[in-house]
Length: 494
Image 1 (tube, rainbow, N blue to C red):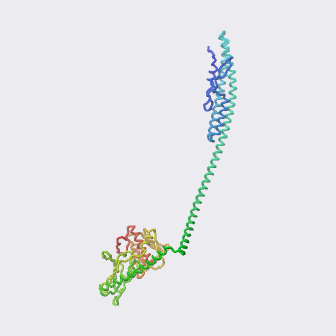
Image 2 (image 1 turned 90 degrees about the vertical axis):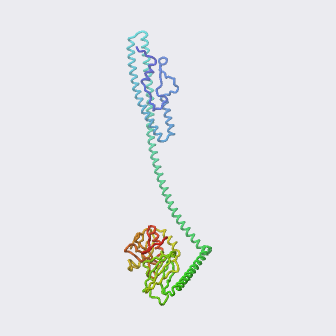
Image 3 (image 1 turned 180 degrees about the vertical axis):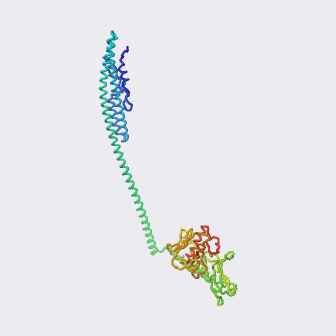
């Protein structure tokens, strides 16, 4: 026979009620323990002084949640309420399981009491007293179970209330999160618009500052110029006095240089007269780049020049090497840049008699031409206003203004928007001063763009003509091309 002990109620309770889910933060993971006390009374065990009732636990958890709500951010609060809602759902499920367990307890107690009643009629004496005692314990346990179910129902109501509260709080948190998210998006859009407006304002301010700075600079330059004019008008500086003195000295030096050249020429002519006996021709003209030399008769017995054969030569001042100037067979010759530093010689043949005329010294360079060319070299393309006088050896019908472009890679001749000729520097290209053409020879040059296409071009001044020749030869030399006249050999250093 099975004996019912006093720990029977504890065993039944521990086996029938499962542990509460750990997601709900209770102080204990089990329900309080109950024992049978005096007079068959079920009392609560006081072994653990920290064990709290379900109502106190729920109240404390609610207070903790409300306290944390003040500290947590909106997103953390929503997450917390979601966890609380899930815990409440689990707790509700556990209550349902406990109700099922409680129903099973009632069924078991009823079966146990029926079994004890049937057993009571079969035993006698001390065993019968034990059975009656067991029946009374079962009845007391049933009463205690009923009381416990009442408490569980009350706790269930509290848990349901808490679940509803958590659900409402979760929905409120979601709404708050959505509102905060919408507010944050609106703030971001506002911030972006503000940043864009600030950038536009900064760009506008920078543009205005640049414009104002440029305008201020122009005004300052005008003021400086006005101040300089005032100073020059009212207080002439020592620099201006020195400039006037330098100009006067330069004028005197140029005058004396011309006088010296004339004296040298007269001296050389006198020497030649003494050496040759009687001289019937002489060279007239300034022996410098930018001028021209003319053969003139100096005796009544001199033959007509058109009946004589004339040929001009370049003679090295150091070695005396003579170089024929192809095409220079006229009585007038204008020195070109190749002739600078060399002596020019003209051989005149008349009736089997040869007369040789030479310059008094090497051809001098033109004043200021070197610095002018160096300034033009910095440009990518240099333009000169010209007039085309001949094309392929024939007179050019039009006397309108053309433009000669001297570039770093090519030479181009244009009339308005029409291109007459454009050729890149090559070995077939030729460029030199015109060898003849009378008084205008110093302002004209000969340009053969390619075989079968040549021009005689006149410039506005001798300086521009010589600058165009030097510039084109400089650019051609950079392209490994020696640009010279017909049958010319470029001297070293050009």
